[in-house]
Image 1 (tube, rainbow, N blue to C red):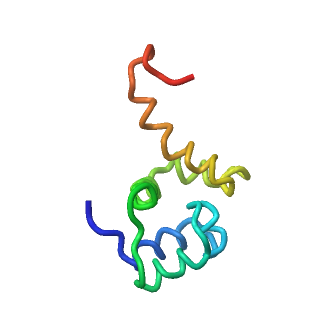
Image 2 (tube, rainbow, N blue to C red):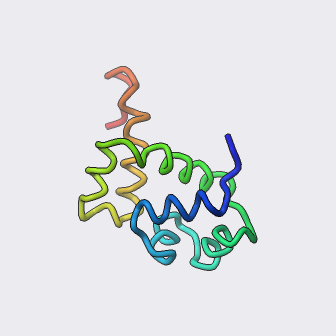
Length: 98
């Protein structure tokens, strides 16, 4: 996995149409943390890096773009659900989470 650069973080945020404050809330980080990521003073790691990767890879998916128009898309849990749902949809019917 390539390092999440400041330009990639900013591009993802702008593609989603979020302000830094909104995107920080979505990622469960402070505004200061997100600002540092976009300024290159720090870099996301762990869960945050993975969520950013998932967001970036789903931005071009038409069904994800459509789901972002849902009023619930500003809710961080709904957005996380949208990102993780395809991972569980690939499981056999008996193994899906209900």
